[in-house]
Length: 122
Image 1 (tube, rainbow, N blue to C red):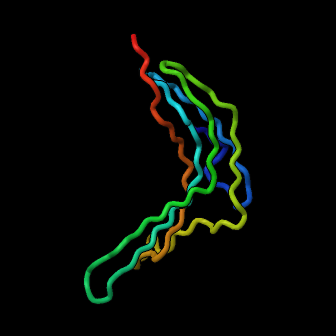
Image 2: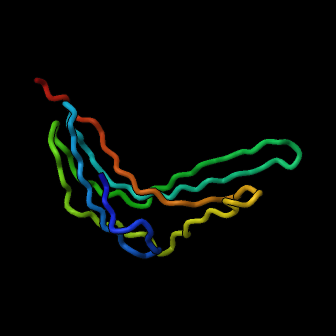
Image 3: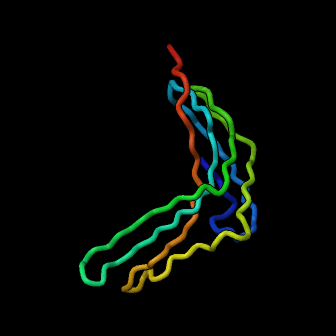
Protein backbone atom coordinates (compact mmCIF):
# COMPACT_ATOMS: atom_id res chain seq x y z
CA UNK A 1 0.00 0.00 0.00
CA UNK A 2 1.31 3.43 -0.94
CA UNK A 3 0.02 6.32 1.18
CA UNK A 4 0.31 9.94 0.07
CA UNK A 5 -0.66 13.05 2.03
CA UNK A 6 -2.80 14.21 -0.93
CA UNK A 7 -3.53 13.33 -4.56
CA UNK A 8 -2.31 16.41 -6.49
CA UNK A 9 1.18 17.93 -6.58
CA UNK A 10 2.84 20.90 -8.32
CA UNK A 11 5.92 20.94 -10.51
CA UNK A 12 9.07 21.29 -8.41
CA UNK A 13 7.34 19.93 -5.32
CA UNK A 14 8.49 16.90 -3.33
CA UNK A 15 6.08 14.16 -2.41
CA UNK A 16 6.53 11.94 0.62
CA UNK A 17 5.19 8.42 0.26
CA UNK A 18 4.73 5.84 3.00
CA UNK A 19 5.01 2.30 1.60
CA UNK A 20 3.69 -0.73 3.49
CA UNK A 21 4.00 -4.25 2.05
CA UNK A 22 2.15 -7.20 3.57
CA UNK A 23 3.74 -10.19 1.84
CA UNK A 24 1.58 -13.24 2.57
CA UNK A 25 3.22 -15.45 -0.06
CA UNK A 26 5.90 -18.10 0.32
CA UNK A 27 8.27 -16.08 -1.84
CA UNK A 28 10.22 -13.09 -0.69
CA UNK A 29 10.19 -9.85 -2.65
CA UNK A 30 13.44 -8.29 -3.79
CA UNK A 31 14.27 -5.01 -5.51
CA UNK A 32 11.19 -3.23 -4.15
CA UNK A 33 11.07 0.28 -5.59
CA UNK A 34 8.85 3.30 -5.99
CA UNK A 35 8.83 4.84 -9.49
CA UNK A 36 7.59 8.16 -10.81
CA UNK A 37 6.92 7.97 -14.56
CA UNK A 38 5.55 10.32 -17.18
CA UNK A 39 3.19 8.69 -19.68
CA UNK A 40 2.63 10.45 -22.98
CA UNK A 41 -0.01 9.29 -25.44
CA UNK A 42 0.11 10.47 -29.03
CA UNK A 43 -2.99 9.98 -31.16
CA UNK A 44 -3.42 10.61 -34.86
CA UNK A 45 -6.64 10.42 -36.85
CA UNK A 46 -6.74 9.80 -40.56
CA UNK A 47 -8.48 12.49 -42.54
CA UNK A 48 -9.86 10.09 -45.14
CA UNK A 49 -10.26 6.80 -43.27
CA UNK A 50 -11.86 5.96 -39.95
CA UNK A 51 -8.54 4.95 -38.46
CA UNK A 52 -6.95 6.13 -35.22
CA UNK A 53 -3.34 5.42 -34.41
CA UNK A 54 -2.13 5.65 -30.81
CA UNK A 55 1.37 5.45 -29.40
CA UNK A 56 2.20 5.37 -25.71
CA UNK A 57 5.59 6.48 -24.43
CA UNK A 58 6.64 5.98 -20.81
CA UNK A 59 9.59 7.91 -19.38
CA UNK A 60 11.02 7.05 -15.95
CA UNK A 61 11.61 10.28 -14.03
CA UNK A 62 12.86 8.91 -10.73
CA UNK A 63 13.17 5.57 -8.96
CA UNK A 64 13.74 5.07 -5.22
CA UNK A 65 14.97 1.62 -4.17
CA UNK A 66 13.31 0.45 -0.96
CA UNK A 67 14.84 -2.98 -0.31
CA UNK A 68 13.33 -6.42 0.14
CA UNK A 69 10.49 -8.08 2.03
CA UNK A 70 10.81 -11.56 3.52
CA UNK A 71 8.20 -14.21 2.81
CA UNK A 72 5.16 -14.05 5.11
CA UNK A 73 6.26 -10.75 6.64
CA UNK A 74 4.93 -7.22 6.79
CA UNK A 75 7.40 -4.42 6.06
CA UNK A 76 6.84 -0.71 6.62
CA UNK A 77 9.49 1.21 4.72
CA UNK A 78 10.66 4.62 5.96
CA UNK A 79 9.05 7.56 4.18
CA UNK A 80 10.64 8.09 0.80
CA UNK A 81 10.79 11.42 -0.98
CA UNK A 82 10.48 11.89 -4.73
CA UNK A 83 10.92 15.33 -6.28
CA UNK A 84 8.81 16.29 -9.27
CA UNK A 85 11.10 18.16 -11.70
CA UNK A 86 10.33 21.85 -12.26
CA UNK A 87 10.96 21.59 -16.00
CA UNK A 88 8.57 18.66 -16.49
CA UNK A 89 5.50 19.43 -18.62
CA UNK A 90 2.27 19.66 -16.61
CA UNK A 91 -0.47 17.04 -16.91
CA UNK A 92 -2.40 17.65 -20.12
CA UNK A 93 -5.62 15.99 -21.12
CA UNK A 94 -7.24 18.32 -23.61
CA UNK A 95 -10.59 17.63 -25.30
CA UNK A 96 -11.54 15.04 -22.71
CA UNK A 97 -15.23 15.94 -22.88
CA UNK A 98 -15.14 17.48 -26.34
CA UNK A 99 -15.84 15.71 -29.59
CA UNK A 100 -12.32 15.92 -30.96
CA UNK A 101 -9.56 13.59 -29.83
CA UNK A 102 -6.56 14.91 -27.90
CA UNK A 103 -3.45 14.78 -30.05
CA UNK A 104 -1.12 14.63 -27.05
CA UNK A 105 -2.08 13.60 -23.51
CA UNK A 106 0.43 13.67 -20.63
CA UNK A 107 -0.06 12.23 -17.16
CA UNK A 108 2.12 11.02 -14.31
CA UNK A 109 2.06 7.68 -12.51
CA UNK A 110 3.53 6.67 -9.16
CA UNK A 111 3.91 2.91 -8.94
CA UNK A 112 5.39 0.30 -6.66
CA UNK A 113 7.41 -2.49 -8.28
CA UNK A 114 9.04 -5.65 -6.89
CA UNK A 115 10.60 -8.83 -8.19
CA UNK A 116 9.87 -12.27 -6.72
CA UNK A 117 12.72 -13.75 -4.73
CA UNK A 118 13.48 -17.25 -3.55
CA UNK A 119 10.73 -19.53 -2.32
CA UNK A 120 10.44 -20.36 1.37
CA UNK A 121 10.16 -24.13 1.88
CA UNK A 122 7.76 -25.38 4.55
